[in-house]
Length: 328
Image (tube, rainbow, N blue to C red; front, side, top):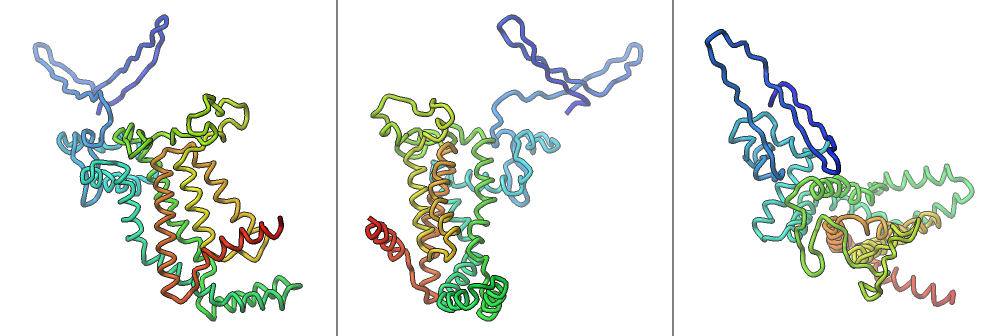
C-alpha cells in the first residue's frame, strides 16, 4: 500500500466522475540516474477467494498470500466480531462447495453449531427438566409467601440451590444463537458470494427478504401494501417469516406457561413480534432461525424426556384452544 491515498467523487454535468490519488514514498533521483516505482491496484468484486482470508489453522490464500500483502483480507469488512464472522464464512464456503447451494450450507452450519454447543444445551435443558419437576414445590412456596415477595424469592433461591437448578438455564440456548445470528447477518451483507444465491422454490436471493407477501395473498392481489404510510414497513410478511414464527411459537409452547401473567403475555406475543421484525431481514437469516428453532424443539424434547420431564407441548396447545372455547 502507498504512503497516502485519497478518493474523491465529483460531478461533471449529469455524469459522476471518480478520482483516486495514490502517493508512494518520495525518492531522490541523482543527476543522470534513473528511478523506478512499483505499485499495485485492485479493481474488482471483493470475492473472498480472490482477496483472501486469514484465520488460524485454516484460511483462503488469494492475493493476500500470493503477494505477501499485509492484511489485504481486511478489504472485506468482517466487523468487530471478525473472529466469529470469518469462521462462519469458511464453514459456509466449505459446505457450499460440498452441496452447491448456500441455503443448504446455512442448514448444515446450523447443525454444526448445535453439535458444538450441545454440552451447554444439554446442561441447560437438564436444568429446565429439574425445574419442571419441582413446579409443585415452587407453587406451594409462592402461595405460602404470597404477601412477602422478599421471603418468596429467598425460599425459591434456596430450593434452586438444593435441587442444583439454574433459573437462567432457559436463556442459555437463546444467548448462544445471538452471536451466530449476528455473524450470519454480517456474512450475508459483506460477502458478494451470498448475493443472488438461490435456495429452493421462490427464494432466488438469500441476501434479500422473502419476496412473497401474505397481505397480497402471495401475488393474487395486484397492490403494494408496503407503500402505506407509517405501517407499510410491517405489511410485508412472506412465507418463510411465517414458518419461522410458527416454529418459535411451538418452541415457546414446549415449556409450561410462566406463573406471572405479565411474563406469560410477553412469551405469547414474542413469536408474533419476531415474525414481523424478521420479515424484512434476508431470507437466509429467516431460514436459519426457523431451522434452528426446529432443531431446538427436537433437541429439547429428547433431552428433557431423558431426564424424566413431561413434554407439555401438545397439552399447552390443547389448553390454549380449550380456554378460548370456554371463553367463547
